[in-house]
Amino acid sequence: MAVFRIERFTPLPAAESWRRVTDWERHAALVPLTSITVPTGLPNRVGTVFVARTGVGPLAFDDPMEVVRWSPPAGGRAGMCRLEKRGRVVLGRASIDVYPNRAGSHVVWVEEMSVRLLPRWADPVIAGAGRRVFGRVLDSVLDQPAGRYG
Image 1 (tube, one colour):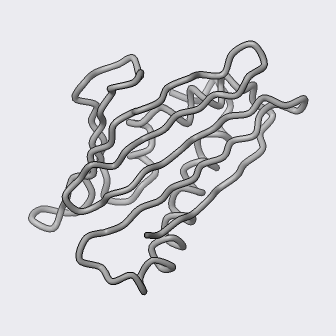
Image 2: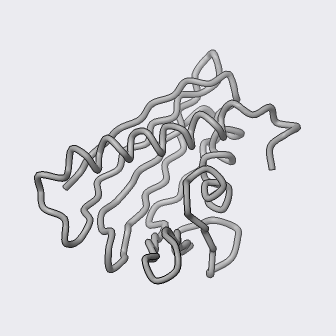
């Protein structure tokens, strides 16, 4: 299983960081060849399902994910979101934690994933690619001024 961890510090308040990093459809604009739909609709909560479709034509695959824990930051406590990947191609889980701090917030994204039909020796390559792609996602959603986001 490929595992990677990404951390970012931002001057944004925890509630705003949370809103941005859990805007699933927004992630698609930042991941090549990917679209995201939320068939269960909004708002996000335990049980929300969203599907990332990656690829082109017959080479595309769906990566359905379900929110299994949803606890937004409030009253000085951290926000915690847990996702389970339930696709035919990509399996695993992800956690997104947003910690308030004096300077704004600290975002930690940890993902464990396996890609069917790929050998275990490919895990470091998958983890490296995931770290780069999702690192760019975090950089983009956290760096945009609030007035320009959404």
